[in-house]
Length: 150
Image (cartoon, rainbow, N blue to C red; front, side, top):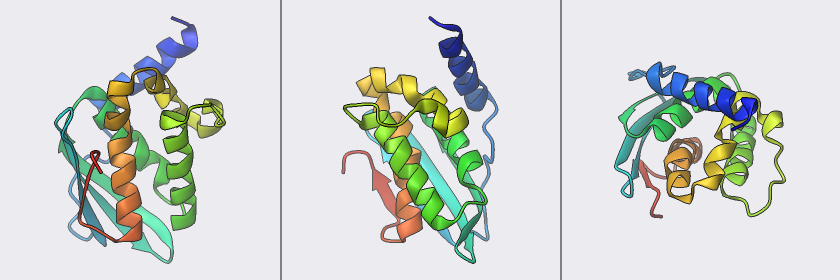
């Protein structure tokens, strides 16, 4: 394992052990539930939108290290971004995790690049993408829940 892989693994474990923005948000403008039946991951993502921006984002839930770390990293990455920027970030992370080729350079995604290694473990991809699909649904406002089986 390379030093970079070790660093990425440490970052993921740190987010699992000390999840950022892990709290309910009573004044959220959207709250969406996400569920990964394959692994049992469950989360509720809260988003507070104001003036076309993600003013605040948080989550609560239970799940594997990858799903909780990914949700924690998501909250740090999208807070303060415009809705369009958050959607673009969703597309880039989704491509990083599920794409056949690697058109996204993990380094361009900052700390989110740590999730690139998940691509090598297909059973974990749904764990890592759960919070991102939940965010995408929260931004569109179409539904109140998301499952990775859709």
